Each structure stands twice: as structure tokens, then as C-alpha cells.
Image 1 (cartoon, rainbow, N blue to C red):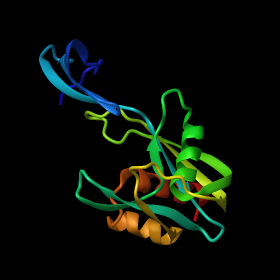
Image 2: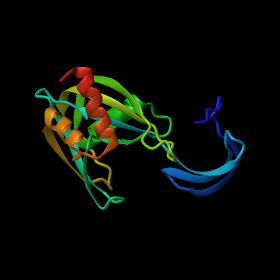
Image 3: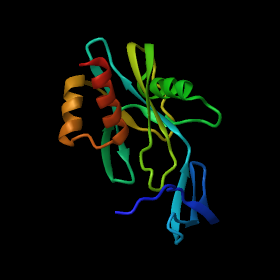
Length: 182
């Protein structure tokens, strides 16, 4: 088993492949710790937020939406991308209200996750919302989803059984389980 004191890969060159409104793609040629070179394909994506909203009966407000990449609907917690310069708390509160109509009394950070560190730069900031007051939804023009209340214990079970596959939802539910000792 080999051991390196410095695991850093050094960028030698970059070739831009695609640039769009949500992400850019580039291929980097890198110098490896052992002196060899390799290539890294990188997707630079804007950061995002996700909120686990718990009502007074410990039901989670979830959203089900069609995910084109996978060709099916997924059950998730409310989430979205941050606007340029937007702080995670403001973005998370905005996304929660837009997607569910919920406005919380209590809003707690659950940390952040790196969904796919092998090639994807996005950081997702997770939050827990409690003391929910329901107002009007404000979905984006291209956003279609259904909101459902699911008991927290059932969400934990669905995460552990593999029924829920969305990483941000799994992470937020399990973090909340430990934090709240539910």
C-alpha cells in the first residue's frame, strides 16, 4: 500500500467544453501525486439549497416532480439553486415558499453536502424548517410538482429502505433524525 504526503492534483491545462446558464463543463489535464498525468472532466454548477420542512405533527412537506434525466418522478424535499450573490438562508427560505407555500418560525442549518465530488462542483446547503405557516405557492413557470405531507418516521423508513433515492432528501432526513432524536 502506497502513501503520499501530498495528494493534491495540479492543473496543467484546461479546455472549456460547454458554458450554459446553470453550469459549465471543462476538461483539465492534471499532474498526479506520483508524477503521471491524467484528465479530469469537471462540471462547475451553481450551489443549491434544500429544506426539510416539518409541520406541527412531524409530517414532512415533500415535493414530487418529474426528473427528466431519470425519466420518472422523484419524491424530494423542497430545493433549488441559489441566485448569483444570494446567501443560502435567503435562497432556502425563498425555495421553500415558492415550492410549498410554507413560511417557518424556526429555521436551522443542517450543514452542507457535496453530492458528487468526483466531477461536480455543487455544494448543497441543508436546512430544517419548523413552525410552518402556509401561504400561497409561487412556482417557476417551468416547474410542476405535487406537495404531500408524509410522517417523519415514514420518511426515515423510505430513506433506509432505498425507496427515496434523492441524496439531499436522504441526508437532510437522517441529519434531522439525529439532531431531533425523533
